[in-house]
Length: 261
Image 1 (cartoon, one colour):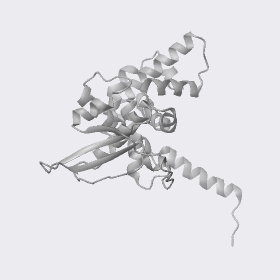
Image 2 (cartoon, one colour; image 1 turned 90 degrees about the vertical axis):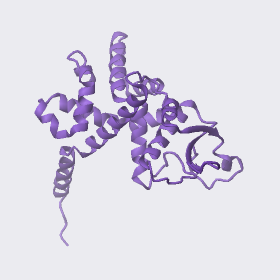
Image 3 (spheres, helix red, strand yellow; image 1 turned 45 degrees about the vertical axis):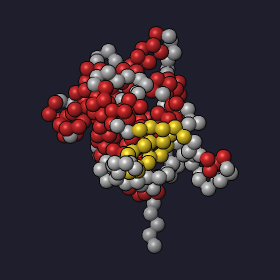
Image 4 (cartoon, helix red, strand yellow; image 1 turned 180 degrees about the horizontal axis):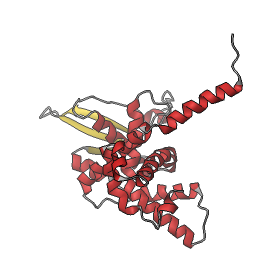
């Protein structure tokens, strides 16, 4: 058996990582999810959505009921078979009179307002993903520790981009940097910034920290497009150009070097 030298292994890994770094797939997918969330917000609120996003209003616009209940009675009774605490679940049942399907999203009444916001945004993505197929979902955990289907990963990303719309994110980030510099609080700590963003968006810090990498993917591609000419921007796809056009006015000479370092 041939024993490979350490240098050979490192060279192979370097090639693999370089190829991945040069691909735009992951950035483009997050860009599409990001734009989808903004399009939904614009449909519901027009141009007037702000932090924190009123997720209940989105449900009302779509005609979906929201109810608060104790979703973790099994824990109260000492049944520890479920590892995750249930924060939200979807119920699709026929109306007893009309027999038409009625959709209700239940959220755990003991959870914090920020956690409920995230649960509602997450479950909304599941409803959209399964729109029209009438799939019945009785009971599952929101954001499982180890998801076994890709829908969960998409729902996590959609929830973040719905609750932290990228255009509002840029405004908030720019203002935070300016205030921090004026107060002499530089360099800025990542934790303090994420705490601020969590409070502004009313999203639990844990979920903001977990999903912040997705926001950075979109931010990177926006900056990349900003440094290219208009013809080159088209190679990233129509969705990317639409999102770039939406936020281009926020990328001024004054803040571009602050936002992207």
